Length: 365
Picture 1 (tube, one colour):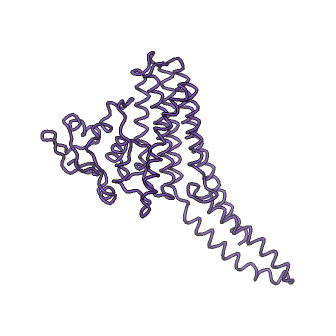
Picture 2 (spheres, rainbow, N blue to C red):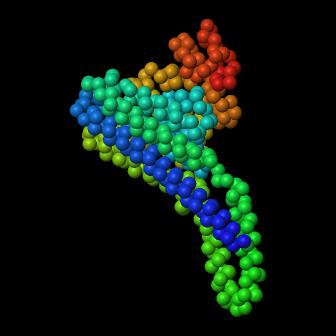
Picture 3 (cartoon, rainbow, N blue to C red):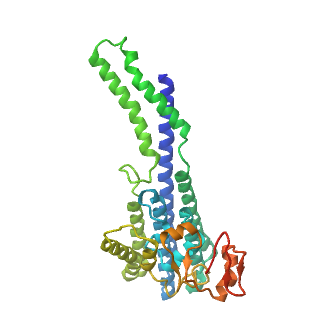
């Protein structure tokens, strides 16, 4: 009985520790990819000093920060309950794109943002005076791919539960063995103080390992032993800020920081004023979202990031009850309607009168 309990407890502890270290390694790879992408982007364009080149670098840095910030929100969803499209750093057109494509599918949000980041990298031929060599451009794409690989690994850890039969067997035999151990040792150890000490240390050791496994099982929560994901991400944000200072100066880096942090401060100020309800609803998030930039670096041809004026999400219950169908008061122009079936896969779109019928993916009104 003791050998079987020892085997089950140690096996469970080893699996929990392996999952814990795997999650930490994947998190480290994702943050490393963000740092490497920004630093290589700045190094490859070291001799580009035109305003359009600075604009391109700032947009790549901003999209990298927003992408990492969104991943942090996805990992902390079970603790904070904030959907990824409500991240304050996202602009209004980005929120629109996320709602139109993935809706309430929280874990798919970074994938859409990755498409925008790759598109921004590809626009270097329009913003740089000398077109970047193809090997350098592929190197930047590789860092994005490394980030996506690490993110998929994190989702594997998050969405794969610990084998319940193993947990059930371990706890059943463990508690049965611990509670019956004093009766088995009574005939061998006659003195009560010695018996108490032995039972105490054995119970402390085996039950302690079970509690250690419980602590290591989910490292993305809010417990003391869980990862400080937001704190680690802030260090990456500062590193990107320092790298941009080295290339374009403090003014450009501070402008980027203000552009990223101002929506968060605005959201916090608005939430503090609404003391009755601290969780922001969809309507409030949409109204306080940052306006789309005048110049969309690398995404000016994106159908998902176009025609955002006049769009308004419905209430939270309507948004997540209807899935992709989340907008009301939408005015669709001819160019967007003609291509919506290609981007979103809506085969029931009628472009003759700009009216979309009900479909599994989307219905525009």
